[in-house]
Image (cartoon, rainbow, N blue to C red):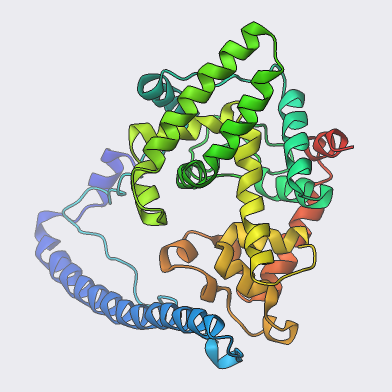
Length: 370
């Protein structure tokens, strides 16, 4: 960043300030006009994306055959106008502050303050991997799905508390609340607890019944806490936007800390994938999903992901990935932008999985599944 002294030295002097300001106003007017024109085109494009998606959903509900015309076949518009000019009266352009993303310490503090809950952390990473392996296999996930999706989502070496943006350095900045082996957002956690939390309670109760007194008491206490969390998660309609609102509260962040608990976290991480498997089966997809196909559902949502994996292969080279994202989601997903048609995105996902499963964390998880 330029020092204040250097910025002052490069600032227009009083004699030419009027000319500099006049030039700035002209450039700013051109920039704003170009931005407005681009926004109008972009709004039309993303409205068309949403409309086509709505129409595809309706056609499937009516068991009507889809065609290529049911997709937007052009890529999102890219802004090509002039850059934003610098105001001569400002020493330097101030970047807007980046939003603060809660991190593991925040989830733990919220769990403590809101639910008097402290996750039972594993004694080692191996303990969590073995617990996850046991739960995931029992649920019906395949070894290939488990390991390759872990590799893709958790960078092949991510530990049970890995968070998006912090995969390679704890000193970096978190980019979302995505947490754990399958990178659950806080909204995912709240939604899963609302919909499937009773299954986790039953699993804890079954384990408590055959445990020594001290362990049984701890598990019974955890059951009571999870039930309170379920009650909060179910305090709104079963809707993604409603769960997003809850996930942003202190209680919602406290629920997200369940992912860090070795008794409950493996169930949460597994359930996210099993929900997609069940969705595909309910839609009549009888064969086993490949890891890349399951990841498409994990990445873009069940409905959108199912759309990508069931479309004819001949279409995949022509259908832009933008069809399966919201505008903001696409903007924040460089992988989908680089691999801008379905065939490329699936191939890139598979290729990345192939590389990540070679890392020590993925190999340790694979060993735990044997």
